[in-house]
Image (cartoon, rainbow, N blue to C red; front, top):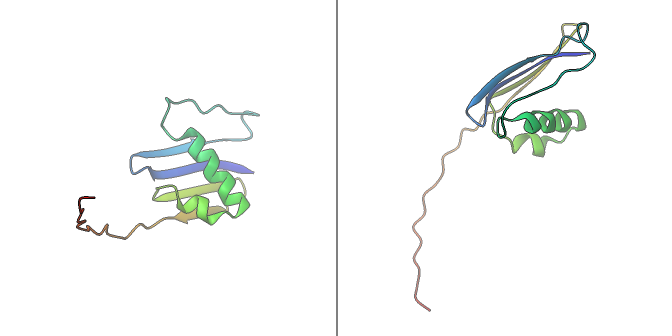
Amino acid sequence: MLSSIYMESLFEVYTYTLDLKPNEASFRFIIDPNGYGKTTILNMLNALYAGNITALASIPFKTFRLAFDNHYEVVVEQRRDYAIEERNLIVFPA
């Protein structure tokens, strides 16, 4: 069973550890202000379990780690090593 979720540098801002401890409570609430990544973390879980790599790759993060109570882990690391190329545009009057 999933025991914790670790997220590093979500949106290049937030780092979280969600300790689920399934033996201590039957459910958990995730409470944070709007824009802190609650739905995004759930979408990432869904994308990972569904094998939707495109959806997972569209979310900026550094490390996404799922730890299980049998001591196994699933770790996804994202590397965004690219440069944005500047282009000069020439606009001609109509």
